[in-house]
Image (cartoon, rainbow, N blue to C red):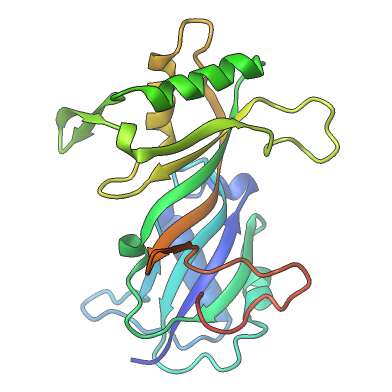
Length: 250
């Protein structure tokens, strides 16, 4: 086996409605066009050995998605690979950084422990009422929600997975005089991830009739891993003005 590359990319606009399977095909085609020596699985229908990070709900945007690529040989100089790949992808995909992965790194599915989200709400909301709802949710001893697994419905407690929750202005366009109501939340991904839709159900159940927010748009802003007591991203974003593909994953 050759090298393993890790890509950090974004997903915005119409492509947020692309299914995971279609997105995988798009990536495989772009990687082949870039001339990378992709490694393939064995069997009757070999597939490129691509490992995506945690699943992104259809319709959600993201600033921080990840993809690990197994190669048969070397990618050579990865310094210009990010913009080269970005030019081969549909509008809405943006490649922020590419780095070589050190041997023995755990998979993204195993390593990511939480995700941060910015969620815009429908309608207008009183900020104090919204802050009160967030505080009420964080103070709740339990947040039950029904989940279906293999045709069976069970009730799970989401409270341990809601790590932070607060009103946010991060969804406001630059220079806007009126900011849309939004919340900022960090959700644990282990032992089982929480989808934004499940959090929406909890918020609508927890608040009074006058404060029951419906989610309009969701954007994943970070995925987090913890190594030796230090929390970091699987691959940090490139600094403004810096080369967009360099070094090793950090």
